[in-house]
Image (cartoon, rainbow, N blue to C red; front, side):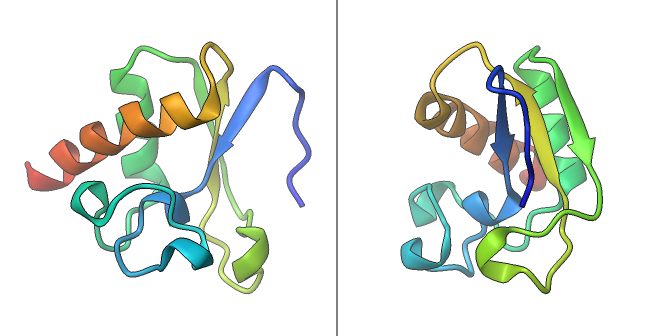
Length: 97
């Protein structure tokens, strides 16, 4: 389990993965999801919002504990749901370039 300070939000690539069901961890609509996002793409999307972020390598999403995909720790400046909804279109734009 990833333990962080309360002033950071953890974003997992699984939140934005179009291959996953909502019950498996996807948190955005399929229209905003991308197939198999990487932690680097997620970091670029967060950085484009001018937020402080750090990549945490070798971390596994709890429900997929066998897949070490990593995660992004973002400085908390807005609620997690709002952050996810702002990152998703940026991630999709990065993927479409």
